[in-house]
Image: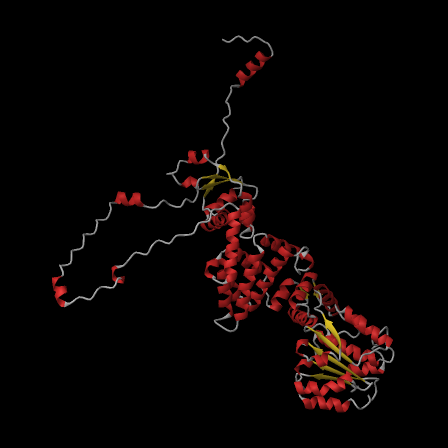
Length: 563
């Protein structure tokens, strides 16, 4: 029967264990010197090598010819422990055997000497699941076991163990395995399994595994079921991950307050059967990366991503403050917590992105702090901020309580006045004059505007470089089209000077023009009308070539007679 990769490639010696050198070195030294402890406690997150090291230690302690503290793997004891024929090594799952009677069986067995090996070893996995009575029954035996017994306790939740147990064990804390170590192990296993795994795909698997090598090998096993040529796309398909471009696009929608585009992206991802909870978790991880870029001196050493992705993340982090990023992460974390408990994962993610792109909808303390930060940034840029005044509500006569009247008072009441006749509709010419001015697609299309006056009053617009930079996360095409251009401000008009005809083609499209105006509004706080800038043409003197020749002769002292 097929054996899964994490079982097939379980390390056989301490040297094969990845990322736990601080533990394997100590255990090898204890085996070499013969200073074995009677009780060990291995703690750490899942898939970091606790059970693996326990099995290697049980073999190394009983090996007939250990090599540098590692089991030889060739002697009768090593082979017997490997195939399960030696019963002196007992592996027990405390989640299934958690009662006091199970511990009493162990207490009775430890009195007997091992049948073949030197030590009788008890590996108790998930030891925190034992009942209080079982812990109390184990205390005396754990403190003073027979000299031929070794206890190895393993747990992922060490805080649930009684202090009386902790004080009787030699404790080893297993760390999360670094992504680079996981990737190297995956590349080795893939090579041995005759599969081609790219380094970027191995790093992507390592990032998804979150420090657990067992999870990484399980995901590699799933990828090999899809294809033996494993790249980033295969990993994303096998793990159900959204492509990184979608993550950056959704983050850009939140940064640029583009609600419609964010909801469209979620809809397309949902149609592709992407897990909304995983997508939310990836967004949280993305904004965490932006937070590290803003806060850490060398974030590249911490973040697991390609150089191109890191460059994009740096660009997005430039548009956010630390307070903004913390607020984004808080909104997404609250949505992630509620997923599976309320309306639906998709609805929760949509509500979170609507809040991020429309901060006025969120009234939490974090949202208010983010809005205050945005106002402070606007004030620093010299943008005047004014409170919006709401018009007074018109009083409706029916809202006022009417005094009660008797029948006599009602009879004396004068007849109701006839309503005044409605004014006649305005004439066609008057309605035409009352029409609002059309929003100009470009300056040249508005014939009622004095173009010469606009161009004459145009002054250089200093913030145009920042506008072009802010267009990059919105649309790289628009930013590239306006690269190297300049702009001039004239009242409510912003005139763009460029030789790229593609830029003016984009200005003619309503959706593209609206994106540009939105970015300009976010930076300046003003809404401009966009149009092309007309360069002042220098009048060239049209001179007759013969006249030029005569002038040269005069300059050289030759007298020229005019006819």
